[in-house]
Structure formats: structure tokens, C-alpha cells
Length: 387
Ligand code: SIN
Ligand code: CO
Image (tube, rainbow, N blue to C red):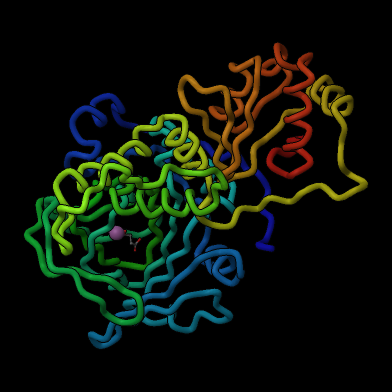
């Protein structure tokens, strides 16, 4: 298990007009926001980042470009001698699942819905370090930590992409619309599909807050996986009207329409699709630090209520996705659905806030269905007491 860090509650805040950003830039065009987070303290040291990259549960990579030769190696790592040379980068995914400061950084971006959020990726690069020109299918806010990096970003455009080194995808050269140096606290927003390339000017740390934007192929692939796990019977193609005057090798227009209709009926089934959206978008893509309570520590509903009555609050495990769909009385947690019959606002608070106390839950605390489910989630390790 990765090292535990103490909750420091650092102070930082967004220092730009979110409304203006959403209207003019979000998913539209790249943008540099000088001192976009102010103040922006160091969230973790390169040594702490390396510590995370040693852990089995944490996804990490080292990318080097030594003498023009690109190389990418996946973690976990036992030693970091490559990072003693120039043009080397260590990248660690989902640091917000393991480090409270990175989780606090993610909270600054709660103005974008949680179902779109992916993770906080942190990179440490030595001088000249970078991953080369590439295109991400994810939108990202890159916040410069210590040191500085030179960034070029192009307009969103189709470009030739190719593989270099092991598992490193890059793209051809592009004409930059942004060509600038980021210093501590500056933010670079890059919508999905815009080519970009960053080169470290000195040993530096970068924090990428990423947002997923699935394409049709990803959604249909995920939907196919969802259907494989679903036991119910589905409508089958049937053609009792078939006569014997057809050409042997032909699929007629009428038959094509019937096949499309069979598939479209499914996508138009809002009950099915809503269940799929809730499960798919709440399923965590990477490991999270969920620790189910052992036999001796498990609580019952009376203990849940009395602990809340003592003023102790509940905190959701970092990275655990808790979502609801507008108009549906179900809470989705990590790919599972939990229907409820009353106190919708309290379940919604569980989805909308990381921490809750008795004041937030006072209405639902006398509802056995609510306390039963919350007790189950505390015992599963989804929420823990923040003493
Ligand atoms: C990095 O932090 O080095 C890479 C970030 C990116 O280009 O997406
Ligand atoms: Co990128």
C-alpha cells in the first residue's frame, strides 16, 4: 500500500473567471491563464512522487529522450537513475487517489461535473525533459509547479500520429497557436484533440488535471461490455414475413432497416441507457485506496448515528466516484447501483460533497433505508471517519 500522508489542508484558490472560461474556452480553444491558481505551493516533492511510482497500485512511466532516442518504461520502479540525466520525465497517474494535496487540487476543479473527471497526473522532468509532441483524447489543465516549462500548443486538427519507443504515441510537427513558458501557478488549458509539446527548462513539476470525453467507439465498446454482464433477454431478429422470392446473396433495404431498428431500440431504451451511464461513469478506472473495515471494526446503524451525533464527519475515499442521474432515485458508486425511495437530497449530497457531517445528513438520519446503506458503505470503506 502506498505511504499514507497526513491531511495538511494547504491553501490555494482559483484565480480566474470561471464563467468566462466556460463560455469562451472550455472544449473550444487552448488558453494560458497566468497565475491561474494563487498561491500555488509545492504539492509534493519529486522524492514523494518517486515513492508513489514504486507502488504496485499506482500507474507510472519514465520517458526519456537520450541522444534523440525516445524510450518509455512502465512502473512500478525500484530505482530512478534515469532521472539523474537530462531529458527524462517521471509521470504518475491518479496522484489524487493517494496524496491529499493532489486531491485538494482536484477539488478546485469541481466546477466541471465529476463524471467528466479522470485524474490528477503529476510529472517531474529534468532539464529538456518532456514526452514529445502528441495529442490527448482528454481535455487537460496543466498547472506548472516548481521550475518552468516551454509549451507549444496547436489548434485542434487531424495530424499524423505514430508510435515511438515502447508505448509512446507522438504526432507530426504542428504550427503552434500558443508558444510560451509556464511558471509556477500558471495554467495551460488544452481541449481534447489539440496537439501539444512541453519541454522542461529546469527540473520541474507539472500537475495535469484531466477530463475524459468519450468518443462513440469508446461508448459502444463500454456498452457492449455492460451488455455482456447483463442477464436479461433481448429482442432477437425475426422475419416471419420472409418469402422465397429473394436474391440469395442480398440483404434487402427492408432487412437493413429492421436490423438498425433492433439496435436503435436499445439505444432509445432510456431505462437501460441510464443504468449503463451511471455504472460506466461511476466505475473507477484506476486503483483507489478503499480499505473495508475488518470484522472487529464494522459498525451498525446505531453506531453510525451516534458517531455522527458526536460531531465526527464522514469523508469519501479519494477518487471514489459517486454519481446520480437527474430524475432517477439511484446512487451509483464505483459501477454499482443503489436504488433509494426517499431523502433524495441527502443521497445527492453524498454525491456532490467529499465531506459530510450531521448537519448535512440531519433529515435522512431517521430513515432506516438511508442509515442502512450508509452503514454498509462505511463498512465497505467507501467513506471513513474524519476525526
Ligand atoms: C507532462 O506532464 O510531462 C505531460 C503532460 C501532457 O503533455 O499531457
Ligand atoms: Co498531453
